[in-house]
Amino acid sequence: MSSLVGKKAPSFKAGAVLNGGEIVENFSLDQYLGQKYVVFFFYPKDFTFVCPTELHAFQEKLKEFEARNCAVVACSTDTEESHWGWLQMAKNAGGIKGVTYPIVADTTKTIALNYGTLFGDYDVDDNGNLIATGPMIAFRGLYLIDKDGIVRHQLINDLPLGRNVEETLRMVDALQFFEENGEVCPANWTKGDAGMKADHKGVAEYLSKN
Image (tube, rainbow, N blue to C red; front, top):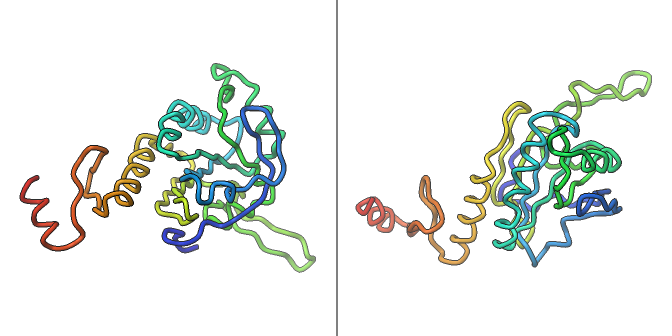
């Protein structure tokens, strides 16, 4: 699947767990349209090893995302019940107790498929049986979605490679800086740095100062 950057984020309705224990039906990112930025990230499976480190890392920075008017939402192909059970397990036992942002249950695999982060393909044999090639779980996909529902940043890691939450915050800052100032963000830009005008003169001025 081609990149979603610059395109409307695929809409969905699915079960999810909120606030560390409340199971809801028909959760949708559409609730944030016109209201908040969204960091929507996929992880492979509940009750695994790298995944809890990422979910806890996002929780640890949740207030910083919220201060930027940015919601954090996670998703995997596990069930709502699996999410709920994992949320009841203590961190020192490999669980994710204490995580409060929504965790979506993509049990049909269609959300991961539509976002281009599903690991595995499927086909139908001569007898009409569904045949999957690959585990049919999500890669570590991450999408920064603006308030208009447009994907502005996309990152997909293979299963063994955990993400950098500070880099995700940096991308939120960069997008908001561009929207507020109309200036683009050069390499290694961080909040508080100068931007540059998107023209040859602006680039030359920036490079002459750095």
